[in-house]
Structure formats: structure tokens, C-alpha cells
Image (cartoon, rainbow, N blue to C red):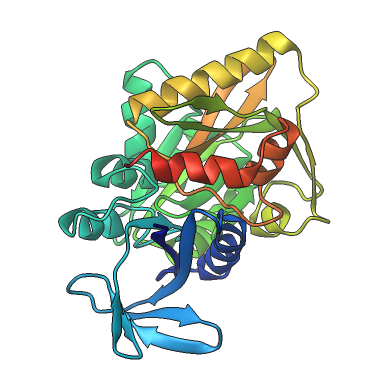
Length: 323
């Protein structure tokens, strides 16, 4: 008997557009011989399953829906929400209360990885390498001069709990720092400012299951803009991505090994992507993404293709790992 799979999209952040694309790609890629996939959109308290051109409300008591008098429940939830509530542990907690297995990290790992400063601080304590940073909280005073003295120029300003590069700025002059901080605060209550690493950007996806652990090939990222912002990430014309990366096997192995160690340190589940900057063979971790983009233009599907694997089979690994 086929399992009913809820592919959950939407969310309450600026990343909803990418979430819908990710969910659509996952929905179309899932093995239809094994699964009955359903696309579910969450937008604040409006939760609906989309079937053809019709919408049916989700009963939040047990995460089910009723169509033509027939009630449907789900065996598994594939979370495709970037940002809140799908990437920060909120949705994971709800699903775990209902005993519905899901595709991502559990509550603690999701919440920790979503908060960049907390995650970086934890991983630093385990010996992982990060750029220097400063955390700002809304309505608390800060000193532009002190930030400049610690981090120098240029620097990056970004929301502390967000993804897809919304609200991020590269600041080159101290007089532009306040404006960049205000821009980032529009996306959340905390802002993280990081020193600029003058190097090359790389990213590496991976998945670990009971049946198989796979670290994907490393991708080299060459933005056509000054940095890899939202447009560069999701517009195929705004960045060049080379998989596998044009680096030595030794350096590639180091990146893959660090990715595996980060996965274990954060107690991750499902498909995860770790982003890096490399300067003169020194590897700096940028962040770990526990709900990475899975659009047709995203890194993970391209990395899977580069290793001659089928994304359909990788998704099956993730789902069957819970049974």
C-alpha cells in the first residue's frame, strides 16, 4: 500500500516564494509508484491541501483533510518551508506531537541551526572555524565604531534567523553600516555582522540514513554580483555554479569531511547543505542549512545529478529512513 506523503510548503517569512518552488520540485520528483504525494500550503493559520485546482482545509487536530466525505491522514511529512515555521523547529514539534515522521532535523537541531549566532557559537566551541562576528538585538544600543574596530571593512550584515539571503548587505564604508543594520532588522529581531573573508565560496550537501550515508560533490559558487544574495542564489543568470568544484581532491575531501562532522555535531536528519568561504586553504563555515532549497535551480539537485544519482532515489532514502 502506498504511503501518503504531505509535501509542506509556504510559511510566514519572505522565503515563501522559494518554498513553493522547492515543494513543487519535490512533489513532482517523488516516486509515484511508492507514494501518494499531496501538496500542502501553510500561510499563517490558513492550512490547505491543494488537489488540482481545489483547496481543502487541513484539520490541525490530527493534520488530516476530508474530501468527498473521505478523511485522509499522512504517513510522512516532507518539509519544504524555508524560514519559519518549517526551518526553526516549530513545525517539527507539532508533527512530533502527532507522531508524524518528517524529513528534517528534530526540534533542537532545527532551532539551533536556524539561529546563526547560536549555531556558530556552538560549533566554534567544538573547534569549527568561523569568521569573527557581532550580534545585535533590536532596541539595544550598539556602537558603529566598536563594530568597525572588531570586524573592519568590508563586512556582511544579515538577519540572524533567516535564509535565502534576504536582508543581507555587504558594507564597504562605515557610514553605510547603520542603513544596512536597519535593513536586516526588517527581517527579524536580531542581526549578525560578520567580517569579510576575501576568498572563494563553496557549498556541499549530504544526507545520512540507516541504509546509506552520502556526501555530495562540492560546488564552487561564482556570483556575478558582489556577493551571493537572493537574486544570485535563485536566478540562474546571476551566478555560475561549478560541480564538482575546480579544487584539489585534498581540499574537496576536507570540505566533505567537515560537512559530515557538522551534520553529526548538530544531530541532523534528512538532506542538509553546509556553505563555506575558503581563503588560502583556510576553510570558514558560513552556515548549515537544514531545509536547503530544492528548486530545479538549487544546489542539491545539481549535486545529486553530478554524482550520477537520481533525486527521486535520494528522497526515497529520506522517507524510508523513518520506517
